[in-house]
Length: 109
Image (cartoon, rainbow, N blue to C red; front, side, top):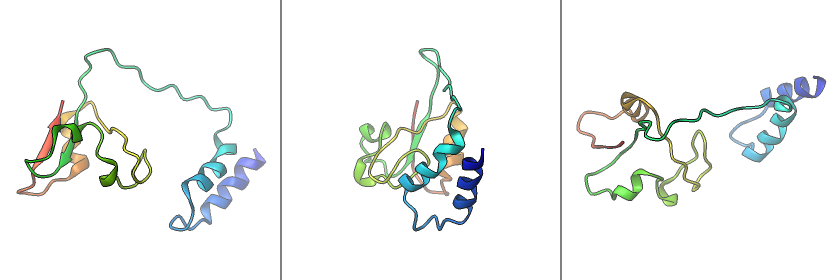
C-alpha cells in the first residue's frame, strides 16, 4: 500500500509533456498489482462501428486500422502504432469524431 501511495504522489508531480509512456507504466505497476481485468466478450455478429474523417477518396482498407503514418498518440496506442477503435453505438462515432458541417465521415459497420 505504501508503494502505491508513493507512486500516486510521484505521478501527481510529473510533467506529462516530458514523461514517457514507459516511465508512467512503471510508476503505475504498484498501483495495479493484483488487479484482474476481464475484458468483455461479444458474440459473433455483434454490431461494431468505426469511422474516420476524410475525403471520399479514402481507401476502405484504412477504416480498419489507420495507416501507421497517420497514427498520432491516442487512448490505446502510441504514435505510428495503429489500433482499431470501435464502439457498439453508431452515434458514438460522430461524438468521438466531432465532424463539422461539410465534413465527410466514413462509417464502417
